[in-house]
Image (cartoon, rainbow over all chains, first blue to last red; front, side, top):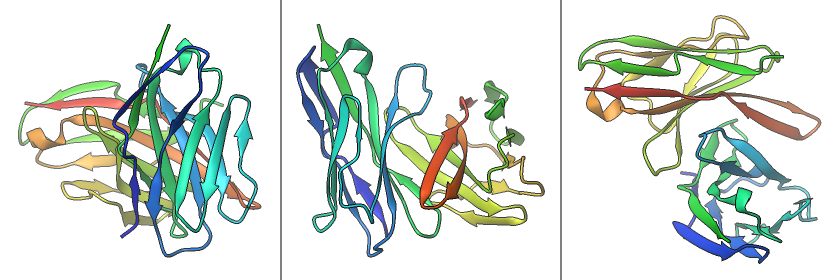
Length: 113
Length: 114
């Protein structure tokens, strides 16, 4: 079965500092998509960044970047220059070739002023 | 575009009652999904659909049913509601073009079964 693991239930970071959230996944497929979603207290799911498995280059979106290690099945999210608005739950997700999208249990990130 | 809309936003059910959660998208997306999110937890896939007339089970399908008669609508049916179904339910739709895939979420329905 395909699974997504986030080993850090809670994390905190000082404003303006950098933080890295971990994600590992298990699959036998070679082509898939990986995502990081942000869920603020409003409950709205917001896409932060995506990575196509066939791309070797790590995705970046402004202050957000990923470290994609396909062989290790690892997909970590780095947030640079953390801002108070980054406080939220962060979910790693994986889309299988059968069109299922599986989510990890989430990491609660608090940005401290 | 309204995106993905869900109704109702909130609902309280008594044990054993039934209800349908509505989900509509106006983006002509082929893929649609239902998730549930229990307090402090991640999203669990209930059912999904890759097109009108096609549905498949996700991780936690027991106690639910779906149908997909049109591209736009993907209702989720709860039969014989149980307290274990108290959760927030999210509907999502997505598309894939030229290896570009993106998923859009509705605002969620908070369901309480007492």
